[in-house]
Amino acid sequence: MNNDGENKILVTGASGQLGRRVVELLVESGASNVVATTRHPERLRDLGDRGVELRKADFDQGPAQLAAAFAGAKRMLLISTDAMDPGHRYEQQSRAIGAAVRAGVEHIAYTSLTHPVSDSPVLIAPDHAQTEQELEAIGVGYTALRNNLYADLLLISLPAAIGSGRLFAAAADGGAAYVTREDCARAAAAALASNFEGKRQLEITGPAVVTYAELAALASELSGKEVVYVPLDEEALIAGMVDNGLPEVVARLMASFDAGIRKGFFGPATDAVKDLSGTAPQSVRAFLEANKAALAQTP
Image (cartoon, rainbow, N blue to C red; front, top):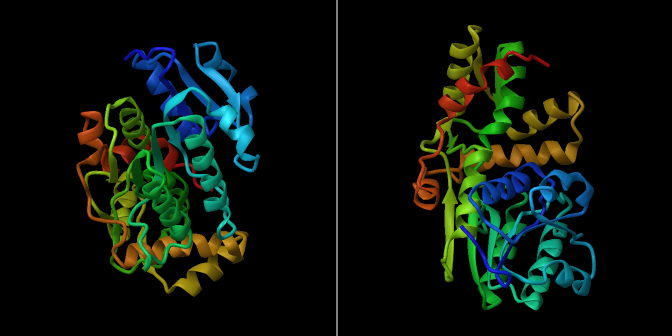
């Protein structure tokens, strides 16, 4: 894919794992005039050596500075920030959206959250919902990429479960359509490279909903050690995470994801990844089998 000088593709948050991979995929596909913005351009020198234009952008900056960072872009990937205090994420993203419109961006792809509805128990859902509402209202095209839970996060939780023999969660018998970061990156790169100019919301998922009981069974099979799923209530789960050194604000956020799983907000699975990229998403089983060595790294 080639773009003329008037049609730059811009990726925000490009020093993060998802943003960097999207930029790499665009470059690998033959895209020219790719712009990567980040608070730390020095971390992307290798991409600069591959022809990517590096710019500094901080979503806490004023609109004029951000608009300058986004200048010349026609399609932009707005990667959700990691601000955890209520409302700050939306404030940052709203500032970036306003600057993008001011800079002449015509289509914004946004990494949202699966089912960001008003009754979602997930604590960051309101920030995503407000961001999508703003995208709907601003008058330019957008693609809301509603990413499900990363399968990659299982490489953090499952080794501990294998070590203790117990997988704790507050999700009852609910499940999530886990999707790999790689598949999210492929979907985002495809959305940027497409000619779609309208407005759409896409649920970005893996190929199936997987429960915690199924995760425990997979962990047992792949490790050769018995792992049992232990369902807890949210407060007990939070207390356990805090006792293990996690800040309470983080523990409550993580428990809210389990509440969302329990209430069915992380399913069903969709074909969006295949529809966008042309390749089916990787299953949880295939992902864990490919990363079997990481499962053995018990904390």
